[in-house]
Length: 267
Length: 307
Image (cartoon, rainbow over all chains, first blue to last red; front, side, top):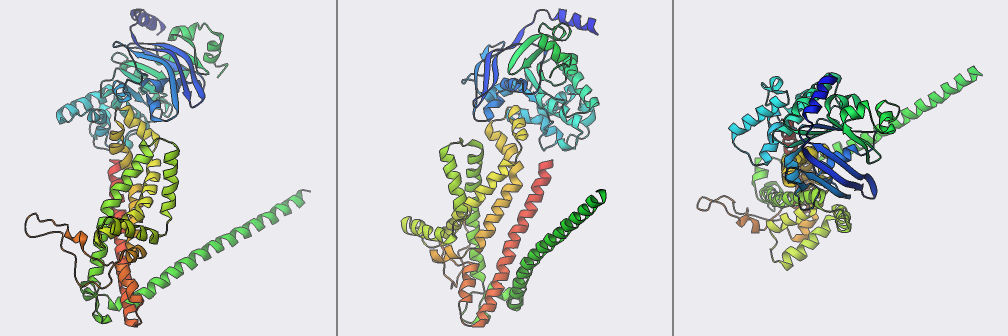
């Protein structure tokens, strides 16, 4: 397992950057939630954000698709560059809708739309103006297959999304995120509301998805971070304390604090 | 020591139980009093009015003779006024609510508008009637007709619709909005496809509460100059010849059920009071019909929402 992992890391020795966070500070009104965060996101890799509650991992994740724009009083400084076109996602000149069309998100609690399985997956395509039934059918099937849900729902695409089990609903949300061919998918504690079997399905799925998309995942569960991620950032009090490949962080962390958190002595 | 404690607890428990019974009894009494009053009123209305009720009563014009009088112009008038009211108040109210809840910046002006809306919802209806008389009739010269009456009642129920629609929108969970936005939806798409449909049943309830209030309003219509002796119907909105649709009915003088009832109850002849009771029965039936329609629509929306 570890040997495999090493080989994979070696194969990915030339890390192409997909995104880079630079000097990012974030404020909810007056309260500072992120301080001078810097973080590289490698293409086709899974980057895990770990740390104790309130350390700012979700806040950081939600910067990537400009979710904070939905609520008044939020403010940030710094840059979040997306490659290869090298644009600053946080810039005022960049339309948040354009950002969200390229960077999809899967939330902590499965939140399918109160519609059919089919319409849930097709929604992202529909908002982009896609009308052709043939193309929609094809893309929906493809997305459901990528989310490892097709075989379970192919006979009931017209059933309400809410009629699926919790784990299936989360995979439906993943299919919804994948349907539009995003460059990056953000996962905000995607298994927090799921049982162990569903969790392991989702984790396997995330591992498989890295071949096509870049993934950033927030997780409370350190074993999960160790299992699914290639890179890990340990955050504490709104700062990135340590960043490195997951093996480095989990096997030989440089900082005492990281080690304490990972070994469960703290957090 | 132990014994003493036991006795103490037992006594205390008994007292709490007794208190419980007293409160349940008091609550029940309040309910019975309220229900009894309503049932009595309704029964009295039915007793007086039902003998008068019939096809003739619904299809006749008013008359000086109580037993020949009917409410045809009144219920047609009420219906026509309601159509105008709904057609104006629903889009304006829902639109305003969506803007205030989803788009408006949170600042002093929005806060002032909010306070004023809540105040307006509790404003006596006669104020709206006089205001409409001044603005619609004298200022704009729209005349004392169905259009003015409909617009006046629309103004009256607008705050009710806005306030309830906003509350309905507020109950839509953020997770639904975020799901839509995360898919790349524009605010308008998120609203149209998800937020407003999810708030639909609540918005509908507000509309119905508003319309049910409007259909029973009398004071503003009298202030506007509703005529209680109308011996003709407004022109039909549908015509035999091109362009088949006519809006002449909007400018017709009008009466409405509550106005007709009010007029009849002021007459000394007790036979007219029976007429008033029968008309009241029809009015209640119309209000119930609106409510029934709402329940049916809400049920359908819920079923579709799960789809």
